[in-house]
Structures are given as structure tokens and as C-alpha cells.
Length: 509
Ligand code: FAD
Ligand code: DLZ
Ligand code: SF4
Image 1 (cartoon, rainbow, N blue to C red):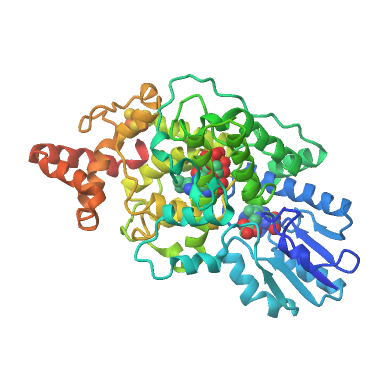
Image 2 (image 1 turned 45 degrees about the vertical axis):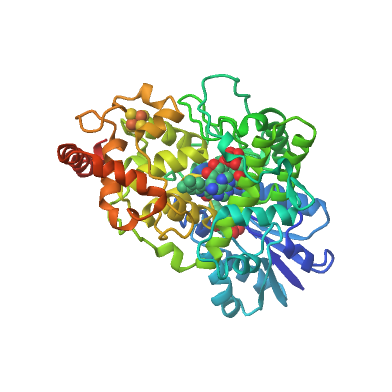
């Protein structure tokens, strides 16, 4: 007999490990285990989503005629791992071979390669994850010999490979990228459609009770849980986005609002990342909407770029550079993550709103992650491993392969510019332009050096001046350094005083 171990983020009927099995002879093993649920303090909604989606998927597999050994979370054995469950199964069953579709985390991948075969006494064969558009080898080949890796060029290759938004070998609209049309702040119009409210079954409610009892100390709450936990719900979520929000996705992709948590975003990353949807099907659905004139090209191209561009690109960067990537700290940051990242309690209105979204929904949209909570950690010089662990824990869509390059590379610039050519550092004026947060804030966004000035402002100039050696010669930052040089010494001194005070009192902001 052979078996396939299907992990919590491999819940796709097309998962490659299944193709190695025979329905009549072989078994599938799935396991809810404490090691995976606790190696970081995952948000309660993330654990509930994964356990519930795993249970629904196992039921579907059984209905399709597969033999499934499903290990339910065992509250008497909270410390067991996937290997323990496999050992128990192997003790009862004569197994020749274990198949696993290659997993999304270097930590687990290495265990499967290094320790499992010996420990389990059975060969472990890793099978390529065919749900991604670009294989790890294809990415490495594309990257080979390039002085600088740029997402835009990789993305064009993915457009050619998939044929999405192509006419022959040309992009539709004669332009690859419509990002310059996608930077509007939101002024309350058009109205933001509400997202579908999912109805949960017995499987879900049993899991919610379990998570509430067994993971009390984990961040967040289940009160507002509204993620798809099975394929039908995921398709419903996708259709809701395509029909009602996609048309505005491009225009308001970067906009933020105090009372609007989801804006026009798709909310499909949780389903994509655990396998309930595939990248190609969501892009094809978006392309169809453009061809049917339900959504404009700037929106559809912007959406497809995120999925076949950024999502595939960060995965390529991850696998090409692990494990060294996770340890990088090229800006030599030494500051601990401020406590409010865990408590949500801060007087900075923008940060508070993003934390609230995060703890209530295990979600924040890209600009909230990048330009608010991420930007602050960059400006404050937080130790990269601490902020990376935070992002991995608090979002329902977080898995190492996608979270790490986004945080360590895109946000913290800790990889020396491998992922992005310049840091996304910004002062409060960016947040002011793209949101209404500053209207709700006790800090003043228009000033930098007063006792009540927006912390982002002086911290921005502190960042610029302390990293002049790294960035002053970067052509994309030369204007910023010229502005800094033009400042009077008094102004520089006042900025320095204010930012030093803020950094000393970082937990009190
Ligand atoms: P939309 O805005 O509707 O975008 C559509 C889809 O595009 C997303 O579902 C996602 O699959 C993909 N996408 C968009 N941007 C990115 C990106 N930069 N990298 C990879 N895929 C992208 N995304 C994750 O899926 N998991 C993570 O753990 C994660 N961590 C992040 C950490 C930081 C610091 C930052 C700045 C970004 C992170 N992202 C992560 C990327 C992005 O913020 C989320 O994919 C997005 O917010 C998910 O919400 P959505 O489905 O509504 O996305
Ligand atoms: C994140 C997660 C959690 C919370 N729980 C489980 C689990 O109980 N069983 C499982 O197979 N996977 C789980 N996962 C996902 C894994 O930790 C890991 O992130 C991915 O499988 C890597 O591809
Ligand atoms: Fe954020 Fe500064 Fe605006 Fe307050 S004033 S909301 S801290 S950007």
C-alpha cells in the first residue's frame, strides 16, 4: 500500500500527490496537529479555517471514493506533529511509499527530506505542486544570470505562459501594466458592496468550539469569522468579487478607510493559499469579466498581475533563497516589535484601525500591511524576524512562502534589495493622501517636530538619514536625499530630537 499525506494548505481536488495513488489500494492521511497549529501563535481564525476546510475536504474525498485516515485534533496530545500521526498509521499498516506534494514551508520541507525517511522507515517522495504557474526550476532559470530581478519582467513571462490578457504575443490594450491608473483615494462613492455572509454547518461549528477552547491564548477572535471553508463557498466568494467589486479593484486598490475593512479587494487569498481555489481559475474568471465588459482592463490587469505576477514571484524568491533568506537583516535593525502589534492599543489612528481589522478578521489589505503596519516597522527599525513572525501569525492567509518575502523583502528591505529596488518607506502624508485615518487621529499629520506631530513624519526622516550609506546613491531615492540635504540644520536637529524621543518611547505611541 502507498499513502499520500495531504497538508492543511493542499485542499485541492487536483493536488498532485493524489495522482500517485489508487483509490482501491491506497490511503490518504490528513492530520490536525498541535505542532502545526502552534509553531507560531496563529490567529484563531486561521486555525479554525484550516481545520474546518481540512474536515470538509476529507469528507469530499471520501464521497469521491477515497480511503481517508483523518486524525482529529487530540486535546490530550497537544504536542504531536505530522510525523507522529504517520508513525501511528505505519504501525498498523504495511506502507511501501509516502507521497507528499511539496509543501509551502522550508521548515517542514526540510524535515520531510532530512528526518522523516529515517524516522518513519519508509521512503518519502515529494511531488511537484502543479497548482502554481511557475515551477521552482523555471523561476531559478528565469532568474539565472540577471543582475537585478524585477517582478514586471517575470510577470510578462507569466502572461505569455498562461495566455491571460494576450492577443497573440502582444498584451491586450498594447500595454502590459495599468498600475498608473490605479492610485485613487476613495471618497465614499461608489458604495462598497458587502461580502457574502457564509452559513456554517456542524463541521464548522464543532471546529469553532474546539478552537475557542484549545487556543485561548492565540490572537484574535472568531466572532466575525466569515471565510469560505469549502470549495462551494470559495467559488461563491470568487463570484461575488467578480460580479460586484472587481470593476473598482484597480481604481481603489491602494485606498484605505477607517470604517471599511475590505474595500474592493477580492478576499480570496485564504482560499487560494489553502487550495480551495486555484490561481489560474481566478484569473480566467477575471479575464472573462473583462471580455464580457463587466470590468475595465485596468482593474482586471491589476488583479491578474497580483496573482500570476506577485504571488508567483514571491514564491520563486522564497525557494531560491531559503534558508539564508529568513535570517537576513541588511539594515542591521535591533529594535523589538512594539507591544501594540499584539495588543492593538495605540494612539496612532491608522495603526489602530489596521490592528483592529487584523484581530477582528485575520485580514488587512495589501496597503494596510505594506504602508501602515509594515512601513512603521521599517521606519522604527524593527528586527526582521520579529515582524515576520507577527505577519505569519496574525493573517488567515499567511504561509511562510508568501509571507516571508513580502515582509522581509518588500516591507523591511532586509534582503538588500533582492525583491524590491527601493524601500517602500513613507511619511504620514502618504497615509493622509490614501485614507481618512488622520481625521480620526490625535497626532497632527501636517507637522513633524511638535510634541503631537505624526510619528511617521520624523521617523521617516530618521530612516532616510540613518540609511544614507545604503540608499543615497539609489537613483530612485536621489530626490529624497536632495530634499533632506536642502533642509536647514535646525530643521534636521528638530527632526532628530523628535524621532529620538519617539524611538525611546516607542511602546507609548
Ligand atoms: P487582493 O488585493 O484582492 O489581491 C488579489 C490576490 O493577489 C490576493 O488574494 C493574493 O493571492 C495576490 N496577491 C496580491 N498581492 C500579493 C503579494 N504581494 N504577494 C503575494 N500575493 C499577492 N499574501 C498572502 O497571501 N499571504 C501572506 O502571508 C501575505 N503576507 C503579506 C505580508 C506583508 C507585509 C505584505 C505587505 C503583503 C502580504 N501579502 C500576503 C500580500 C497581500 O497583502 C495579500 O495577498 C492580500 O492582502 C490578500 O487579500 P486579498 O485576497 O483581498 O487580495
Ligand atoms: C498552518 C497549519 C495549521 C494551523 N494546522 C495544520 C494542521 O493541523 N495540519 C496540517 O497538515 N497543516 C496545518 N497547517 C499548515 C502547515 O503548518 C504548513 O504551513 C503547510 O502545510 C506548509 O505547506
Ligand atoms: Fe497615522 Fe500619522 Fe495620520 Fe495619525 S496622523 S493617522 S499616526 S499617519
